[in-house]
Length: 78
Image 1 (cartoon, rainbow, N blue to C red):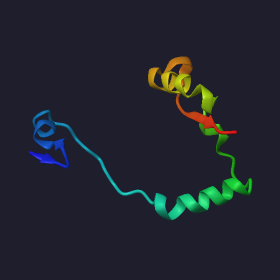
Image 2 (cartoon, helix red, strand yellow):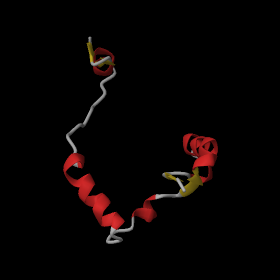
Image 3 (cartoon, one colour):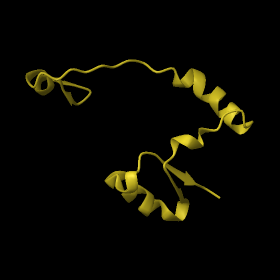
Image 4 (cartoon, helix red, strand yellow):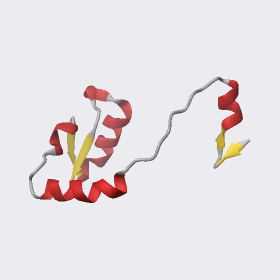
């Protein structure tokens, strides 16, 4: 049985547990962007690596391979 192309029967047979819920992003993301633009919050602590747009291949490879302890990548557009 598939629900939106997800094999629930296979997951059930494997005894998997899923925890899901809604997020409030549509409500809070615009407000968070405004805080960031005004300098009221600084999200830079979230990023472990920074790349320019012309280094996008390296950024993707670093993130995908989790090399150099990569957790979150910021691609800066000049």
